[in-house]
Length: 119
Picture 1 (tube, rainbow, N blue to C red):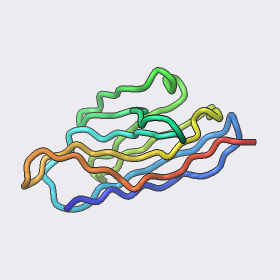
Picture 2 (picture 1 turned 60 degrees about the vertical axis):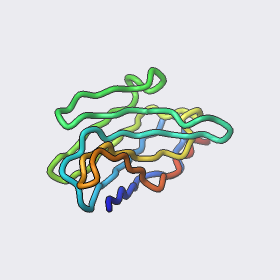
Picture 3 (picture 1 turned 90 degrees about the vertical axis):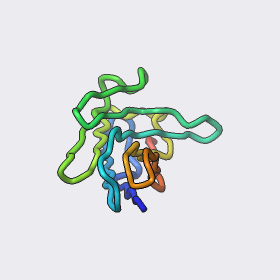
């Protein structure tokens, strides 16, 4: 079994910053891709950013230039640095890991962390 534990969400004023972390633990061989998704009330879940084991990144257009995803492979942890936050960034942010385990290729999700951008 694999667990993803997120931290770092909270309430921030517009223009502020937050850093999310997600640590993976459990039994697996390697993590191919780690990413962050978000879901706002009444909207579908969307990809925010993801990063491969070699460091290649992919961002949603709405966060380019403001958010930075990074990864510490030794700690099996992915980070999302969020700057210049806007009210539209308010959502539940969930970590995702696409990995190889004894059961083959699997995708796991964290429990989600709330990010609220409001004055």
